[in-house]
Amino acid sequence: MVRPRKRLWVYSEPNVTYFKPRGIPMRMLKEVALGVEEFEALRLKDMEGLEQAEIGRRMGVSQPTLHRLLGSARKKIAQALVNGFAIRIEGGNYTIKRRYLR
Image (tube, rainbow, N blue to C red; front, side):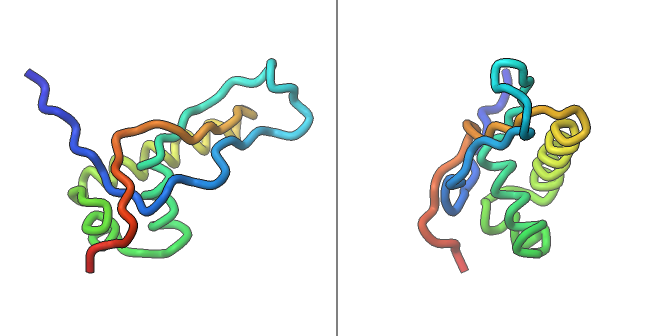
């Protein structure tokens, strides 16, 4: 039996949830889907510059799980940039936290 997935904590959902290459009609685009929890992990690591241990604490996950999230998100973004795919941010298994635990 598979263990149920743990819900991750995110501060808020992103304001912008779709990015596409300019000049390519929507009907011709392929997409990659980035989960909200992958987006949050990227935001905290690459934009805020936090250490993985702190991010794991804020999101309520282990460091190996966070490492997997970051790797998955970065691979999807690289695939979209290299191949000209759109990026859609939606879904995932998360709970919105209004403030981080200290």
